[in-house]
Structure formats: C-alpha cells, structure tokens
Amino acid sequence: MQNIVDVTMETAQQWVIDESFKRPVLVDFWADWCGPCKTLTPILEKLANEYQGQFLLAKINADDQQTLAGQFGVRSLPTVMLIKDGQPLDGFGGAQPETEVRALLEKHLPKPWEGDLQQAQALLAQGQAQDALPLLRQVYELAGEPPQVACLMAQALVDLKRPDEAGQLLDTVKLADQDALYEQVKAQLALSEQAAKTPELEGLEAALEQNPDDLDARYKLALQQYQEGYHRPALENLMAILTRDKNYAEGGARKTLMDILASLGKGDPLAVEFQRKLFTLLY
Figure: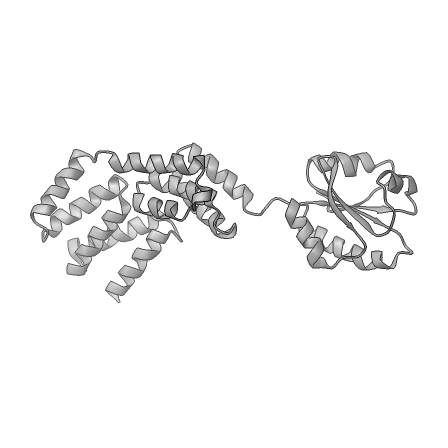
C-alpha cells in the first residue's frame, strides 16, 4: 500500500476521490517557489510514512496542475485538504507545525483500539466472554475508560459469573451515560444474581457452614465453585485453606489456585489481586 503519491489531472480521480472511500486522503498543494511548502511538505511526508498507510498523502504541484488546483478552489500555497468518502472534511492553509498536523489526522483516522473493540464485541456476541474480556480491558485503558466499554466489560464479567466485579464497573458509569446498553447489562446482572445455584454447590456450602474448620469440605466447595464459574469465591476459599495449611492436599490447593489464576489470563485484575495475596502468604 502506497503512502505518498504525486497526483496529476489524469490520476486525480483514482488517488484523490476513489482512494478516499478506502482511507482518508491528505492532499498537499505545493510549488517549487513556495518557501512555506518546503517546511510543511517534509512534515507531511514524515507522518505519511509513520502512519504506514492509514492515510494517503497526495501531492499536487499547483504550478504544473493549475486546472486541478482551480477545481479544488486553491487560492494560496501551501493548501492542505483532508478528503474522505469523496468530500473535503478538514484542512488548513499555510505551514503548520507537526503537532497541529498530527492533531488534524488523529481527529479523522481510526483509533488504534477500534479494531480490538469490534473484535471484542464479536466475541461477546458469540458467547466467548473469556476471550473478549482482555481485549475490552486493553481498550478501556487506551481509550480513557469510556462508559460504553465499561458496560461491555461488565457484560463479559456477568457471563463469566463474576457479579461483584461487574457491579463495581457499572457503578463507575455516571447517570448521564446510563444508556440502553447500561440498562441491559444491569438487568443481566440482576438476573444472574437471582439464578439458582446447582444442588451440588448448595450441598457443599451447607456442609461447610456446619463445620467451617473442615478444610476438606472447603476444598471440595472451591473446586465446585470454580467448575461453575464462581472464580472469586473459589479463590477466597483456597486462600483460606492455604492460610491454615500451605501444603494442603500435598500442594493440591496451591496448584488449583495457581491454575485458576492462569486461566483468568495475564493482567486480569482478579488474578493480580490473588497473585499478590498468595505471594504475601508464601513469602
């Protein structure tokens, strides 16, 4: 994919109009005699190469292509126009510093995280919340914690049976941002919290309640909780076991806890929280 092209009357349709339906086209009208052009054009070329094809720099020599410059209404040099979908969206006249040109581009170019957001939404729609969550977390940080992404993360956490964390995220959404997506996820959270636990899980909880010091009962409960997707309660019970006996089940409790942390994925806040707790306990 080309980053920079020289445009003539014969190639203007291809490179300025048609190409603008595929990606933004930054058109630079310049001339040899134009002093400010000699300052601006190297900046434009540098950015075109840096952005690696996210936009096309179309250079038009206004002296050689006077008819073309006239069709675009160019009255002074340098003149820069940003064309998208066949229409001029933005631009400026005169030499500008790199910071200003970069700011103009970033207004109109796709954000680096937009592709990850679309991928995460597709994964959520396919029921793959475990794969969607790390992508959403990365987008959430890069995009400045937008409320829409907070709601999508909460949705993934509801699907993964992590209601406490989902609720905490929804609590960060301000009243003005509580749209249809927010209401939908909040309703899903309420339903998930009302859902009945399996008889196996309820039986193990009852057994532990009768004898809270029974590490065997607590270990069985933790395993069942993990199997049913209740990650935080499972981790809390495993930590309670290790607090009493660091080598319980010949190291089985510690291995189970570490396996759960690994399954959550690197950088997962729940995993980070319990990694720290385990480190503090062991060392």
